[in-house]
Length: 194
Image 1: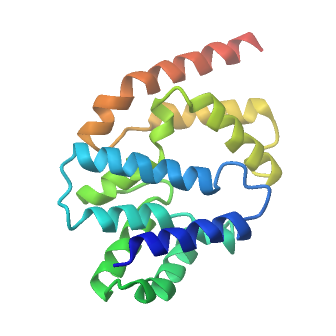
Image 2 (image 1 turned 90 degrees about the horizontal axis):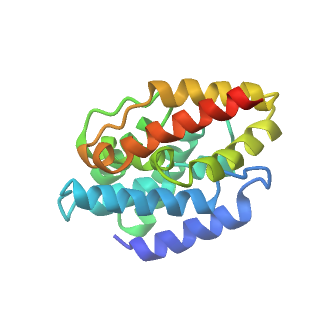
């Protein structure tokens, strides 16, 4: 598998083909998810032969945004099936990667170890100091897409999401749950100030 060449191609595609109003779902998010997947995958002791599949799924999980917003995961899989053979991925690897991409669709329903890691990597920021900064980018994006109408609506959605979210992996729960809970309390306190 030519993973470095694939990464170069995908990063270029994200830089040139994503709509400008995707303030959150962009190349920075993809890199963030890849880094989080590597960290969580290492902590969860992913087998060396499985790590390239996990990282490729992280690389491609939002590539569908280059063509559509709605059901972008389906398009991400179609793109994966189209391009991955050129980079030395066999049919079994592509099938696994597509399965991983599809579990990132909300609400996440991960059942395999790799799927759990990718889902946690995709929402890693919820339990970090970057929560409010990245949340602001997501708010800006969702406002541009007319998916939220006001800051109050957005804050309510965030409280609802954080209140019901649980990380899948032991590593994510160990690293992120305490900060995620703190972020929820901070968010609720901010809402009471308005």
